[in-house]
Amino acid sequence: MDRYRILIVEDSPTMRQLLVFALKRLKGADIVEAQDGMDGLRKVTSDHFDLALVDINMPVMDGLKLISLIRDEDNLCEMPIVVITTEGAKEDRERALALGANEYLTKPIQANKVLSVAKGLLKIG
Amino acid sequence: MSDADGKALFDRKDEVLSLFRRGAEFMKEVVAENERLRNGLNQVRTRQNEAAQVDTEWEKLRVELLERIHGLETEKQDVLERLRAVEEENRQFANRYVEVEEENNNLANLYVASYQLHSTLDLSEVLKIIIEIVINLVGAEVFAVYVLDESSRSLEPVACEGEELSAFPHVSLGSGIVGHSVESGETACAEVTHSGDLAKPIVCIPLRVEDRPIGAIAITSLLAQKEGFTPLDHELFTLLAGHAATAIFAAQLHSQSERKLNTIQGFIDLLTK
Image 1 (cartoon, each protein chain N blue to C red):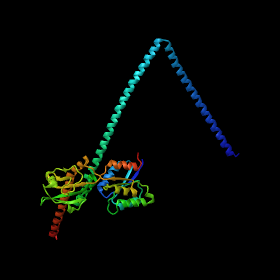
Image 2: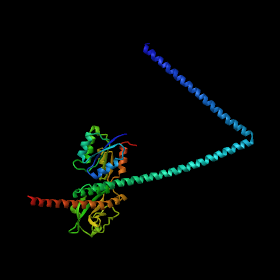
Image 3: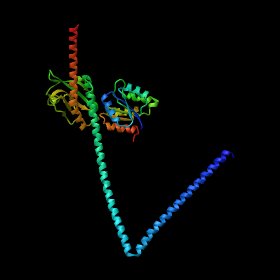
Image 4: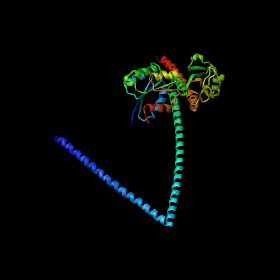
């Protein structure tokens, strides 16, 4: 069975639990949680991940900064990143995608939407 | 030519020979099959010729073939009907699957909300969790959580999002949308996504423990991408009305008991020293 390592970077425990709930339905998913951008950066640079879900508004380091730092790393520039945020404006979406995010989902999110986006990026049929 | 080259050449010769042998066997099989089919065809032709010469035989063959055609037509209709029934069943299963998926998602949201609400006895943590739920699961942009002050019978804003806490009005129990909703215990919900007046929220969820009013959640506007309320939102309102109230009430009781315990402990320490 294929195994997928997924990192959730989100400051809200409620959202983290909801995302874990959604992604647990992926067979072989190994989910790691980070509570802010800095924690996320530490985890993503010290371990291998196949996908990262990143919130934008977070304490210590925000999601946009985290995405740009991830994309600066040679070995992480290919890792798919999904932004999950309350910011629904077009310019916020464009900024995140320009920094290197692969998908942009706005809250409130539906678990099955997250699951289908994750499956698409992980190339699970 | 070296010995090794000679051996390789010898091996190649064997390979070619074996290939030819396999080809010959295959040819034999093809010829035999051809012969069998020829015989079959001849038998059919003979039968047709015989039938063509004798009228009764011809008629018998015709009836036989017509019956066979009729039988096959009926069989085809049955199969088509069964196919249609299976397709219909598949459609129903697909619809049911979508419904179950949606229900599953909704239950996940409700489970997470209730789990988080009862995960702490610290009032500030409970309020933080309520804020998180209303932002992330409902999709509200501007809202406040009110708690009832028992002595003054007024609702005080204690936590909020999207505006300064001081901007939210203090509300007397029974007055305005918030006061009336808390007093009556009924959720007020307008079919709009935004209200410019913090005193006139679009949604007011009364927080009550049994018949005892605890406070309210008043939503003034939704996130730009949120176009309206879904059935799940109404389920969340119901859940918040009960569980957020219980969580706040439990945290208040816990805080009071902690204070009383400290006071009593202080007295005991004074008496025993």
